[in-house]
Length: 425
Image 1 (cartoon, rainbow, N blue to C red):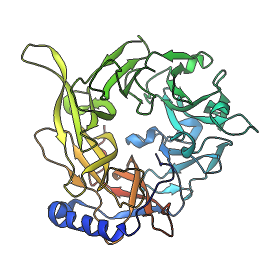
Image 2 (image 1 turned 60 degrees about the vertical axis):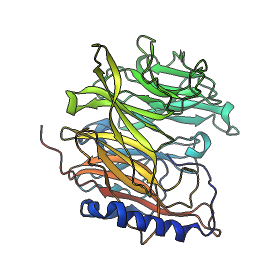
Image 3 (image 1 turned 135 degrees about the vertical axis):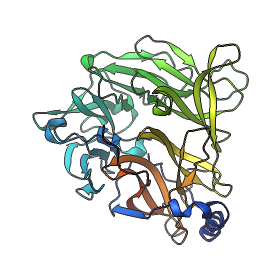
Image 4 (image 1 turned 90 degrees about the vertical axis):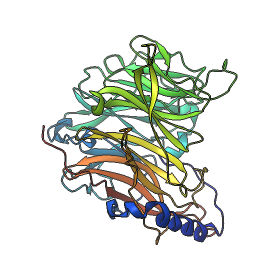
């Protein structure tokens, strides 16, 4: 996800470049052999693009009416929603600027509500869920609506959900075996959260968690109809965010973490290392740690969510941003931005990418990028598992200066993780 216009610090670039170079010489040098070159995919600015289910390394050429599932969607600055394709063999974008098929107009760019379009996957195929304004209206929270575009007779067909005025930032469930996938979203003013099922898109269900969260960190839990989110219990005098789940089937809300350390976002997934048990991670200690949790029995025999691994960044790049997770060839991998600054909104700080496994017995954190000769911001990383293996895609920018306070677009790039091709199943 891109972030709105950010501030800058004149004269900082040289200092940060030296800082990152020092980090490479002190902490990263031993890992340099594992770093592969950064590859430019396109010079075009493609904000907050999201990949369809082909990202998981299972290409389906016949899916989505023959369009396949190696797709990505994004909303351009002018509000047009586009779908492009990923070459599963090479990782290239087609067309290079991503503007392959125009799906809709008057949709919300990422800067409006903090997120662009997302995918909803099910056994019948994929749909795109997004925020769309009332046609011809003044764009704002009151005219925002939730829309779903599905493939009909070989073309993307948009539908606005009835009764969705004043709603924004939808996210679709992503279980390709689900016959009735779901979409969740929030009130544009963030005072309420809702969900609907594909089989009854006219029926809105309120989520009873608005006292805990404004909805920014919510994610669907694969293989379930649960949502994991970061929330704050007003009755807790410690005033720290914890991790919760909400089950759209049962309506149950479960608190997963209870300690005095604030949490930032959360991802839950099926970990092949643990027989596909669900595990989750969150950031903590002001984004200076990633904590991986597994539900295991204590000495009293009661199963509780317990930290099994703590991932820490290099001393010279001590803050995590935008971590996500994927599984590949029987292992889980968390990839993330690492930054010298705790100010994610400041575009004058060059950043890097890193990756780690979750095995508590292995110290396998390593850098994915290490080029300090050209200071760059690396933003909003996303994974796509190609025929060659997992690639991490990201927007790259020349850092902000006095002359260019918003930075300068450097296109979309990827770096190969070096984890190898998917094993045949």
